[in-house]
Length: 447
Image (tube, rainbow, N blue to C red; front, side):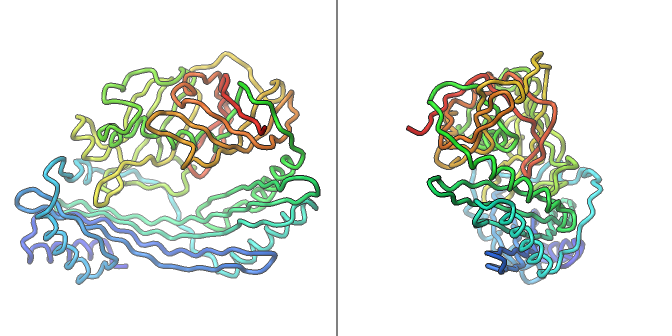
């Protein structure tokens, strides 16, 4: 890939020749290798190199045209600028996007070391051994139908005609194991685990194996539960899944599109109990895929969203910030339409709960490890959800797997029904979060 200075130079030269005065370019290249295995043999090996470049051009009337290309050479950039300039004639006349006012502001200096890609044979060998270890851990485990190791090298950049130039390289690798059991007279049970690090050598393969096996074993002896109201404890992954599903609560673009549970006046209101604090922190050391700037070149940062239960900030792009009289927050994804997305959640305790709740002493508590079917069971505009889940009924430290059940409720009521936020955090690919205790939710067991 050409250097950032080279891309900026021939983009500027081409723009001058075409009479283009205002433009920006965002691009990325991804080198990815992934493998899957089945019963000790490679099932699928894939390697790809992808490039994606988005070019925006503003014409003399201030309208913007957008185009995409996969070429970052002089001819590719020149053609993209010309195409975007032609498209600008038909650009939207309302809420026209503009450069981020922070596109030239300093970005954070992150100590991030990229890890060279591992050889494909090493990926296969690691995954075959991991699959074998899971299969040998218990006689009921008959397969690991979903598994994979993937590694990515990412190079991304942003530049504009006002002098902004940003570039960064990132690498990360992931391991995923998901087992399946078969026992006579019993339903198949499954469980899985995932690890993400900056490279294959940093992944704790043994920990991923052990988590997969332990979760699978815990689901072998299961039973149905009665429907009713139960105290519920959400794992980090389960709570973050719900938080993401209802992120329109603090997404400025959703608010402006009238597709949010909040309004512009919601800032400063109590949306959760004082026990809860939620931060979006793209630069957190545990965020393996941390970005120092967003699609508009705005530096990313630590942004408090909910502090002691109070909604304190929305996630903004440059456009939403301008319309709402705020500052961009580094959450823009550039495209034909600029979208706003969270980076990396950090959920923690706000004010102390004053309660000493523990799964070792609690009675008849539902511990939800993972929620499923979010695409079908969430009504983000109403705040309601009804989701199947994997979990256990816990009674004084003893946990019994739940056969089949769904959890239902309203997310806004859930936030105001939290009774305890544990101190010990769990790290997941999507964020950091401790276990969250909720006073009660409706659980529907299998009839």
